[in-house]
Length: 277
Figure 1: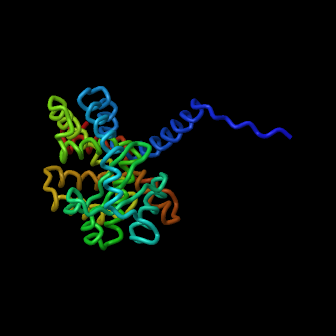
Figure 2: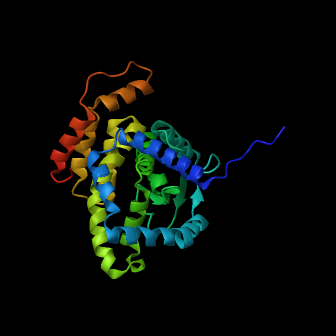
Figure 3: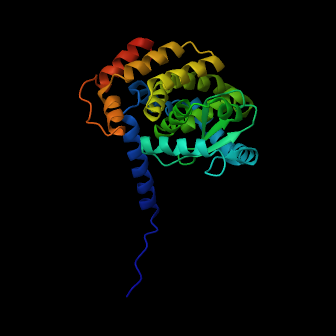
């Protein structure tokens, strides 16, 4: 019997990867804030942004990732088992592969209770500061933070968040004329991306109070004028039929029928922020 033919076609490989990315994007689009997707679709047409992303990803692959891996601890069942279990739960909730999670003592991460998403679209990493693990004792609060990061990965935020991280912490990497316009464009986008991330965190925590506490905690560490609006945006999302149905399904109950549509939710959030449509 002839050996089965193996298709080494690069085209098929690319199609498979593209199909997986498209499926992941569809899952994310079910809850993502429409204003986030709208602006993200335009970022690749902004030359300073594309230059910043290209420079950062080269730096990440060649220098920053190896340095981080050398000084950080990868979360596993043996180390930081609680974090590992919650990351797996969040990934299952959002229907994404379980991402690599690291706990770092690097200065850029120590004071932050949030999770940083860094890397490439195909190879993302969630980085927690050691202080975040120490301070997030509440499982629902930690699930909110990890879920938020998983949602950012699902909605293809990784490369833009990586570029913005390095623009803030290592602007010497960039050609001077690209740094400011790239930073301004990405900061305008990230306000919208925060709304999407907050929704993912709520879906994973399954607890509105925990999600609101997470937003309040981030505001404590990094004062932000949008904090109160982000909290209100979460309350609006909690009224959607989509969120209520997801919660009912997680509890084995009948699907929810009462609630507002995602389109109405997005419209109310846009009105709330004023300029985030």
